[in-house]
Image 1 (cartoon, rainbow, N blue to C red):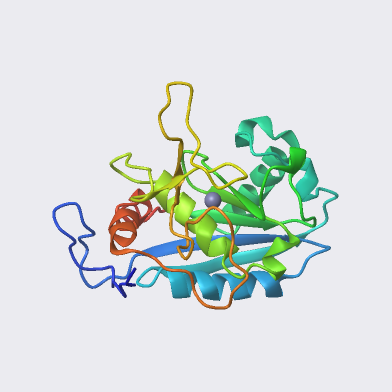
Image 2: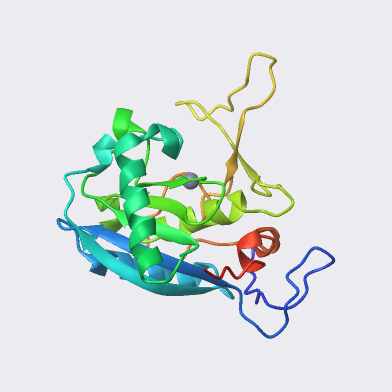
Length: 235
Ligand SMILES: [Zn+2]
């Protein structure tokens, strides 16, 4: 599949991004546990910038915090059901508010390689329904250079202003033998948040390769419809 180096910022069809001349921007606030280092994340941010060409990722602040929280204490369930994480998230929001900023996304980096109940993953993106959206990353970022880029993709899908949240080429779930899975009605099972192409940034499993995963034209159009690019939020 060819890779489009598509520049956001011009109108894309009728639903496209319309403020000419201004690069769409995502602001990121970063919280790192005292047992982790921001260096790993900065590499991830550079990589996210390489993947989502045309979107400007702006680092609006960074803090290191003392916390005993580890990724294994944190689950895939909604933020409201993740008590310790919710309280850390609230503190993070407050930290940025005091500094007169409200990031679109807060990224929290905690120690550990595994989430609660072995929820798959190197990281989790939470649909908080309003900014700041939340991404929690694990020490897996050290081996998987495209983790943050992938999670930002989820946030851009969550925030689709037409509520069109599915990947344009959804992932067909397969069993251990590689056979397509079906639901009780016999329909093929799709994981619609992810992409079916192994080389794609939204493929469910992360890549260790230094070669950037691909983004399709359809995906670029989709992410250009995130409402995060419309409302430049002021305090
Ligand atoms: Zn994912």
